[in-house]
Image 1 (spheres, rainbow, N blue to C red):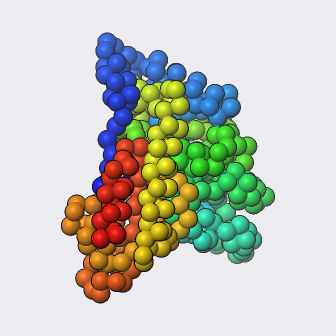
Image 2: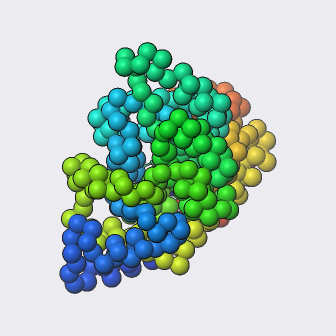
Length: 350
Ligand SMILES: *Cc1c(COP(=O)(O)O)cnc(C)c1O
């Protein structure tokens, strides 16, 4: 019953086997390996973007920070949701890699930025000219940090506002596959067709050992990305091991299959909690994360039996009246089993 994060799962056999195959013989380093050529071709096909540039890094933080650095000058603002990973969970890596760009949070319910608020923030930017933070770029997260999913239309609306102000658009897709499966659209519709310039395409949360791709739909920034990746210490010399993971992920739609399993597990968990006495969803469950409240006594039973998850937001106490509801974040992965969910729900029921 590991619901702390999707990265508490292991790696599917297909990926380990691909690593083992990649381990045979010799290969050119630093991304010049044949497997990387295949990854580039696959991602261009999957995204219907024959010109796109594709790079691999080992963490989502690096993917985001390097992508933002290519598009946002140090005197400008990156507009993000208040709960965005770049804002809350990257220890100022975006500020560091951009050389000082400022993150400007924009609110909206259920992890989604409200278009009117984005518009207002952009309209109000830099009235004092040279003295102020300039408008830089927009970043949106899909799947959002609240487990909700922007539809392609919602992405297009936000991206259109940014573009109306001359700003480029980044998408943090650490859980891109989960969002895509949920929205039922094509990768192109979710990204460049909706106005996204650069995507952090997640792998690790959805079953890889440690790989994310950065896809630049406009290849003009490609060389700059390469230089920044090297300078930032994220160009891997034994790169074939990154390529092999990503190649296995893309082969036979494994990435979509894994995300479908995680989303289905979360739907089952979510329905089970919503049906509990004293159970209540905090956000709609649209991908692989469940945000829900249930009585403290149920938390204590689950924890005693070894369930692992975070109380969300942090800072809630397990000490206190038994009936008081406490909120939790429960994340499912490709490896979450029906048995684990049903056992967990049984514990909550008491
Ligand atoms: C996990 C996550 C990342 C990447 O995190 P790393 O720990 O650096 O790999 C980025 N964005 C979101 C929304 C995430 O959930």
